[in-house]
Length: 108
Image (cartoon, rainbow, N blue to C red; front, side, top):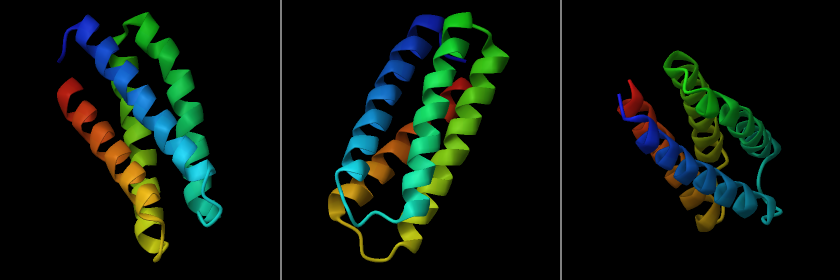
């Protein structure tokens, strides 16, 4: 598992990536509702995960990241099922999903 300060740095970067993806999706009128719902849920989960990061409880951190990664999977799946989406939206979701998956691998 990563060291605590490295986990904090990675999580901070992940928060930025999720926030950027959320802004990209919310600025595009053609994003399907299921994708928007996944993104909103991921936003909320990311905010609640901040408490786990502060607690430095490794099991709780892993669980939060696992939950976030599942939401990222759902968002990517919704993106793929959407058919024609703006390239920026697809890129934002893919980037966010890749970041979540990588972080999950590193903390397990």
